[in-house]
Amino acid sequence: MKEETFIREVIIDEINALIRHRHYRAAFVMMGQTVEVFGAFLDDKPMKAKQQSKKRFRNALYHLFPGKYSSLNRGDKLYDQFRSSLTHMLIPSMHLKLANNAPALHLTRENSRLVLDAETFARDVERAGEEILKRLNSGELRRKRIAFDWQED
Image (cartoon, rainbow, N blue to C red; front, side):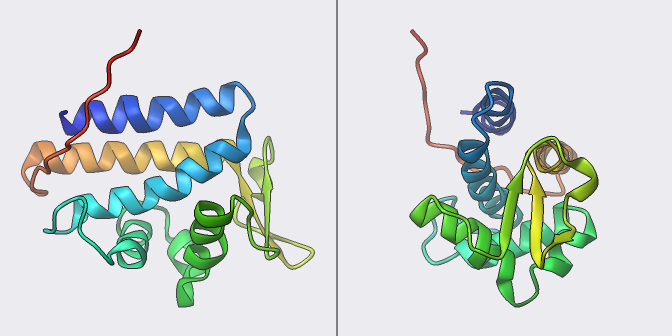
């Protein structure tokens, strides 16, 4: 599968469909994993390289997302409290508040909890994906083998 198809259809379109159908928790899980996947495009290792999760998440936030994300990830806090907690337990940390339709609160603190807004985060994920495609097309990033095929009914 080409990187363009993988990023636009498998990742971005599916996140947007989850949000459109009000499946916000599932969208957050997918967005957390997507940050890590986008980090895989930034390194020279195979997509399925082992023990790269935290490093890839950190690199994607630093290189592809607005600066506030990486500053909030100091000490890998977003990785631990958001990505790992949701991926492994389907529950965010008590230090986070997952929200929707709250763009003004995105990446701010409410009662000492960091607020993540689904729609705003999805737009930032989409921009990050488009940045990867731009870098792939310019030759700045090396293309990766995406061993994935899907047949729709």
